[in-house]
Image 1 (cartoon, rainbow, N blue to C red):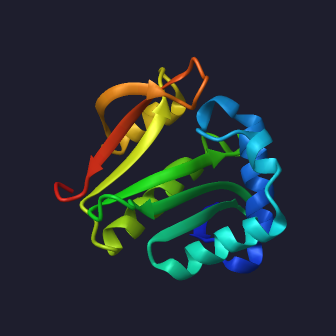
Image 2 (cartoon, rainbow, N blue to C red):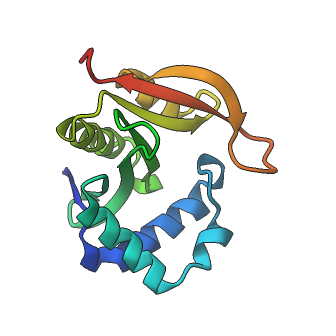
Length: 168
């Protein structure tokens, strides 16, 4: 059974390990890279999780498949648009794909965004007919704006998608 809960500060090492696993598994899905994040200090990882937990403007979630952590997502109120939350780091381990973990993580992020009063949720997804794109579309996200490079010096393109919460 899939469950989702907030990441707590004491779990920073588990978060770090899962985030690095995600970057290794799906390097074409993220704006960051394994090489960049693997060099971060334990203090930075710990501070990142603690700051999100305490801020009220960020929320990180783990998905569990039974007792095992199988996915993560991070949602944050935009620093430049107070009515928009942004979804980052959405990932489910290969063995748990198709189990509903992605849908549950996304639902938790959207519910949190609604609870803090934003009116829209934004994310970026690598272009193509991928399970991620299909999930976001099925949950009401719609493409907006022009395609952008996934990250500097990458040939991959990303599409911004938005879910309007006021219409839900």
